[in-house]
Image 1 (cartoon, rainbow, N blue to C red):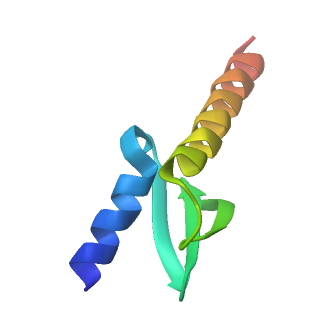
Image 2 (cartoon, rainbow, N blue to C red):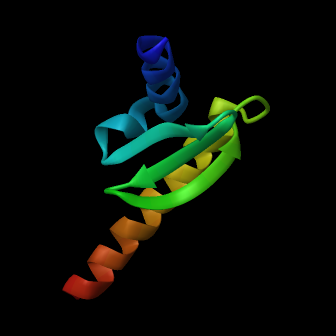
Length: 73
């Protein structure tokens, strides 16, 4: 069961699993997504689409890139 859950969480993240994003099921049907350990979202795991999770990851990734450039400049 743990392997299946781990696979589900990784699949929900898609390519963002390679960019510091992690996901875990906190309790029954609650999927928590983090970026470098900071929680960025909670989802109903039974109704959320992977597309929605990845869209939120994309937004967070872009915010971090823009913030990084702002701090450098």
